[in-house]
Length: 171
Image (tube, rainbow, N blue to C red; front, side, top):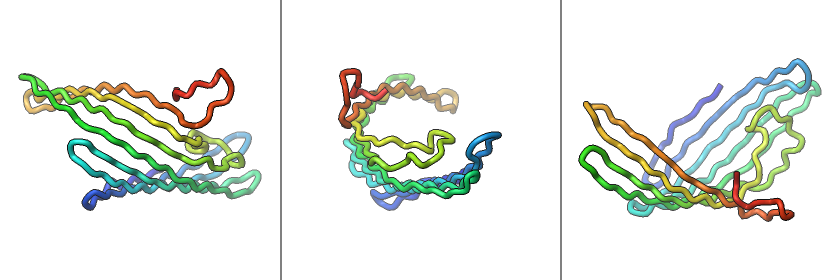
């Protein structure tokens, strides 16, 4: 079950929140419930070149049985991005090219004592730069808006890599 509050904006600031609950049951092993609360605050400036910052908190609480234990994890994430849009109008469609650069930071948080049910249960430490190029084609035909989108992106991890087999580009 999940509830998402759509973004509420006031000037350059906006806020959204997601609340999710899950009940996990297994024939063998850990069973229990999880509540995940994730509010986010955004600040966005600029029209030609857009600068956006997002700070989010994430509280995840676990109510587990066999053995009976309760755990929680609190972490924050920070994202800063720069983007712009380039528009070209053709007779039958518009092309919009959107380059962007984004930095994401999530600190290292102790998660070893949390049972893993799915990907929400382990959020890795992150310090990465992502650059991307999005190409959108849009047209209106018989009052229907048609749009296609193609995005290329690559992330580069700023965390130290250990050994010759480590690659700083995120897969």
